[in-house]
Length: 178
Image (cartoon, rainbow, N blue to C red; front, top):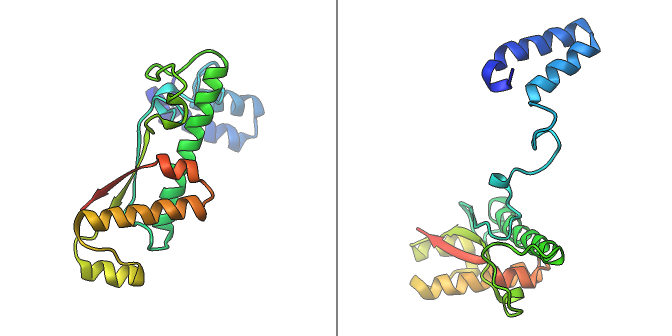
């Protein structure tokens, strides 16, 4: 029986086996709860549908705060996006070494570092200059597209210098939302 087909009874059996102290029953119930031992989930392999390191995969990391506001809600998603770029690049190199390039990658050398990145960081744009001034202080930005370009530059410089990831910072896609 699978965990989804009878999860409650499997869980009950698992708890009962733990309470009884019978190791054999405990192992059997645990295997049933986890699924079959030959599945991708139980052997630690990543399922293709959830493989964020796949170089062909497009990922958007959405956050509710943006630099230069130095809060975990702004910094952590930036780092996550930068490391996803790095990890996708490592996977791409591994595939190329084995002669298995990603499906949508071109075969020319010009595609190696300059290819479009599959990771985008979506950050909020504060419409009000007063709000930007209050939140960012002296690091406030002008209105409109000029302000977005200035903030994008600030984020990229921070990612390159403070995070030590200049290549990833250059390739990161940035998207502002209101």
